[in-house]
Length: 228
Ligand code: CTP
Ligand code: MG
Image (tube, rainbow, N blue to C red; front, side, top):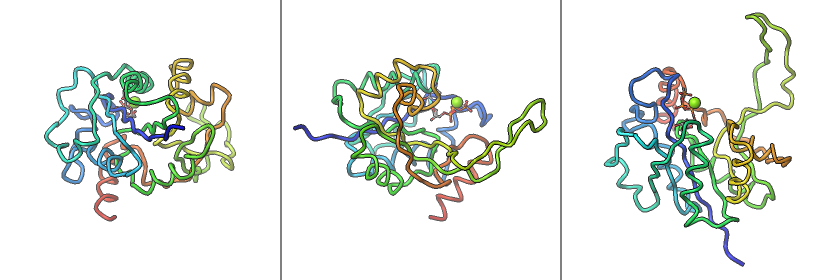
């Protein structure tokens, strides 16, 4: 029996349109480092994770190589990003094929979730490591949800069993490759697995693992990192 290994894959080929800055949001300065340094450093410091792959756009000229020397033993840069997040992930998985075996676990994490902690990752690994399908970090929805039609409230959506999906999302390599090939337009890995009729596990995280999307989010992330 071979030992199952854990790998991380971080899609970082987006342009960050909603942030509205000239450089992609993953390279904006956050707590004295490029934003993307923080999640990559966290993933690299999880002992169980063997390697961390980051997927950049092929024409990326902003990747600050010199910032990552301390992560060099685990970090690998792949310049194979695609037009969508799902495509970037699928391309990254293809490049990993030489190293990763079918049953190894892959933790896919958004570069923009800068405040990920080692504890978040270790909780996910502990809960999902023995699972047959895989699973994701998520938080229960706290607010009352409204369905809109023409800028008016059309309905209230019961939130009792609703969760907000986060990342990392953790699935076995072969299953993930197969799922993404069959459902290329999903917005997260779990969506592709669900499309196969499988039911990924929900692992409760917390709202500090949010995705930096708008300018105000940078301030919030800065505050979280400074106050840990
Ligand atoms: N991503 C990617 N390839 C794409 C699009 C997105 O690898 N073609 C990555 C982003 O870099 C980010 C993650 O997927 O780490 C989540 O996407 P999102 O937060 O939406 O980032 P952007 O697409 O860059 O931002 P926006 O949607 O505001 O343009
Ligand atoms: Mg996007």
